[in-house]
Image (tube, rainbow over all chains, first blue to last red; front, side, top):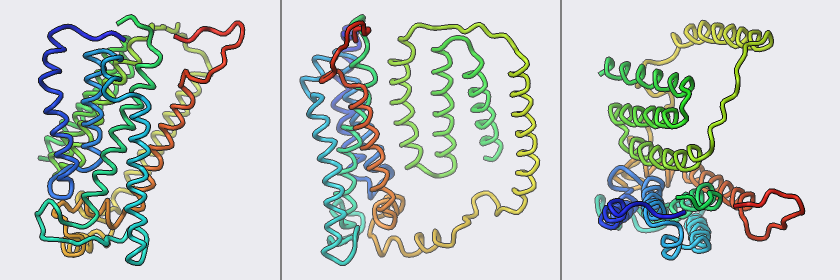
Length: 143
Length: 184
C-alpha cells in the first residue's frame, strides 16, 4: 500500500500529534469529562490509521509494528485484569481499593483512571490491528 | 426538540433505504456513515455526550474501514428477476412486520413515558454514585465501578475477536498447496 499525495502527507504530519494528544486527554480525563477509555482508544487507533493511509504501510509499521500492536493489546488486557484482581486485596473482585481523593482532581476516584488507561491502550492497539488485518494485509500494492 | 428528533429519525430512515437500494457501493457506504452521524446528533440532543463521542469516533473508523476494504473490490452486479419463491418470502416478511407493528403499538401504551427510567437501581446510582465512586463523570463511574464485570466481559469479547481474525487472516505460517490461488 503506497501513501497518498504531498498535500495529504503535509496535513497529516501537522495533525497527527494533535489527534494523539486529544485521544490521550479523552483517556486520562475519562472520569472527569465525557469520554473514557473506549472513545480515547479509538481516537489513538484513528491517528495510527491516518498514518498508514497517508504514508503507506511500511512507514507506519516502522512506528508501531504489527507485533508491537499485538503486544500492546495483550498488555492492556492484562493491566485491566490486574486492576480487577487488585480489588481482591480489599475484599472482592473489582473493588475500588485505591484512595478516592478530592473530587474533580485528576488523581481521584481510585482505580477508575487506571482502568481507563488500560482500556485505552487495549482498544487503540486492537482496532489498529483490525485495520491492518482487514485493509493492509490483503490489498495488492496498487495504491 | 421532539420535532428535531423526528426530523433526524426520518433522515436516518431515508439514509437506510437509500443505502440498501442504491446501485453504487460508494454512495451506499456514505449513506451508512450519514446514518451513524445522525445518531450521534440525536445522542447529543438527548444529553448523552459520552455516547455521542463514542458513536462519532467509531462511525468514522468503520467508514474508513468500509471505504478501504469494500469499495476497493470489484463491483459484481447480480441479475435480478422476481421468482415465486421470492414473492412468497417478501409476503411472509410483510405479514410478520404488520403483526409486529400492531402488537408492539399495543404494548408501547403500557410502557413508561420517554425519558422515564424503568429501573429503580438507576436512581440509586445517581443519588449515591458521586460519594461512593468519587468520579464526576457518572457514566464512567458506573462502567468501571458498579458494572466493571460487564466492561471486563466487553474487553474479553473484543480481545477474542481480534485474536480470531488475526489467526484467520494472517499470511505467516500458511502452507500453500499446489493449485491454490496465490495470496497477494
